[in-house]
Length: 120
Ligand SMILES: [Zn+2]
Image (cartoon, rainbow, N blue to C red; front, side):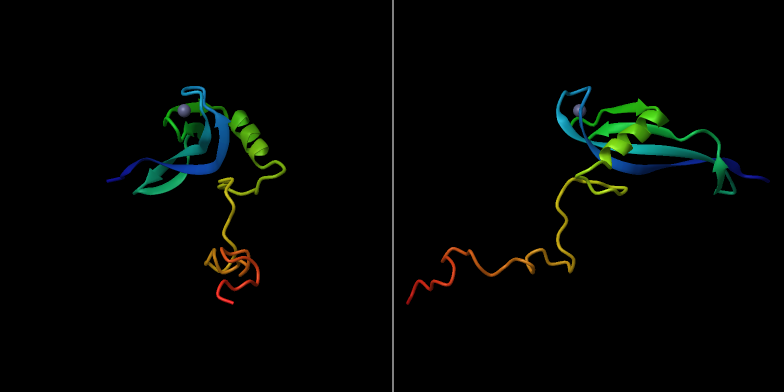
């Protein structure tokens, strides 16, 4: 007995700030592609159809299909100057290396000012 079928998985390519065509809000959109592969005995072997790209608005959740060319254009725009190239560009500042985001804060400029002790 041969067990075969298709398996699909969705890969997130980028987060892009776009104006939503559905709700009209400028919000982050997840650009994802869905790969459908032929599988034999539950082992995915090869793609059976071209990857389908779509955008999902994180504000209203609406999804829209985009062509592969449009997806590549969006990716090229998202990886432009001022943004970190990478699979997930959140557009948020990354905490400094080391894990503790407060470790790198300089010990000055606090509520008591710089070098002035309130009890002296
Ligand atoms: Zn929306």
